[in-house]
Length: 345
Image (cartoon, rainbow, N blue to C red; front, side, top):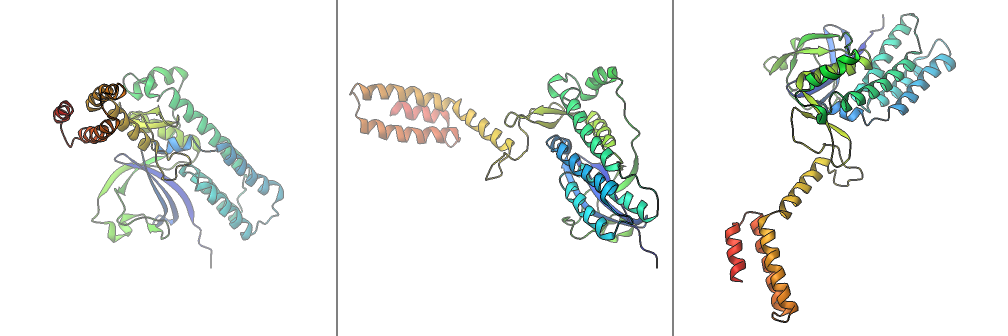
């Protein structure tokens, strides 16, 4: 009985303002399963990739090529394939872009099983392309997609700058497909699901979309795909005012903070949470109630220092005045009511 061969690959598509990444296992066109499913806001994956330790990942991939080229004894045992498969699976979990590692491993494993010559230098080449991708994305984000330098749209900014540098796109493997707008159940990856809705009756009456699905083969293609998407959707990148790293916004958004979790944060606070707190404190500091309070506070404090008001009376007034001030800032009383209270006390 012949052994069943499976092909594993990744696909990317967009539904509304979400980037969908899926890892597919296929026996034939009638037997496909979704092994993992990831959803991100547009631009978030690139933002996260810019932070990845790609040099270290590249070193790990080079180690795989070194082993197969110089240490492995042929024929390579199933135990060895399983060991390296697990090793590369751990790398691919660090970021969806690295699913290309598993895709390549699946390809060369099949080639080896079918006695097709395998170029085990492929992991060296993949490592170089991951480095190139990160450097290219950094340049695009800082030049063509930088929100500060865009006066009209990202596309027009790109036309002004990139095309002068002979910028061009690779041929992207994309095709129209019908995909679900969302899964009917929470997807944990623990139970792979059929991904062809025609073979899965429970999806038939659900909400679907016709979209272009991208099947990347190299990191360079991933970079071209995202650049074309960003230009189409007018995605720009800003520098977060808290952590100082780039994050994506749509059009002329006024957002100033990213959604990264703050390092060493016990409460998992994000930069956006910190930004909201800063804005709240700034708004409080500039509130007219605070100015009205400080004006009377200084007057009464001077009276106390001149012994024209007792310290006890000043302390009682100050405590009640702070409560009234906070009530005004929280809009539990109006500014006029607070000012009237200050005048009568």
